[in-house]
Image 1: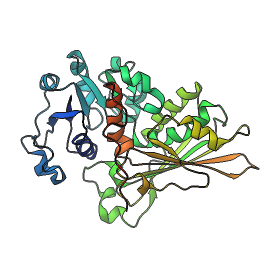
Image 2: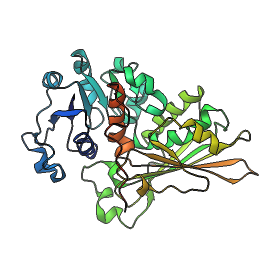
Image 3: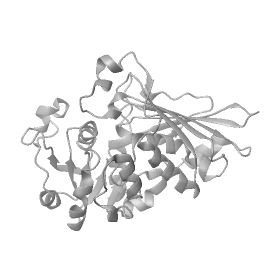
Image 4: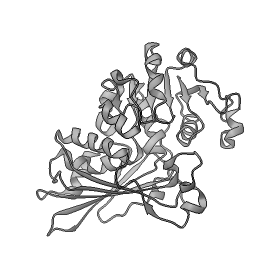
Length: 344
């Protein structure tokens, strides 16, 4: 059994980690930390875990985590993990970080987007970007994995096959993406309260979203050259889900449907739908699946439209983190992640 610790077990990604790991056949959850809920039984705070988890929340102590855990998940706000990860690694404990602390390779770029200095820049070159569809072999050998953001996961999986084959123009990429309100986290905020978010639809962070440099970094590495991306996120009145509509211009004629099907043949959590399909967010709700559909609205202008959907809390966060853990411990990457989506 893999002994697992979770730092920050009270946010949405932490709750989702607990739900998934509680049924993982090769995991024993040994430590769960929370600054605000120390001493509280986890099942008293989250009644869905009654009968499945008997632990109480405890304070964050790196030595305690190292003594009791083989791997530690950080489900914390940005800027927390980077102060502790180095010590855990020195004890031989592996780390999977769900925050953005180790996603960007340039510490100056990270400081620009997250508004604080990076306190562990020496670890940025070691951190492996945890998108298994690209970095499976590196993840399996990693000590430190940076789990991708929800928008970056959904967008990159949609553009990836096109960039790898160099068949689209790199200067006109567009990602028009929508997210449910859980993507904003569990903290209280007026903009994501029921009365504000329900019966409403809006774009936000059009001038620049924190996930933009992460997406650009990932896509640029795939094609080994700079790309230009217009990324506009939107908030929709649902709890879970991301829908990304991606636009690009083909440089040459190719059977794009066949290209996507071939590219993801060995990717158990990417489902390429039949031609003319329109994936729905509810088709991935509660699952680690990304469903993708390919469209050619008109062959005259060579425009291609990719529809990509994920659950932002599962494939966009906690499920993907567990997928990374499976790879790190030489388990089938599907272990503990084969649940069917919830409908309705």
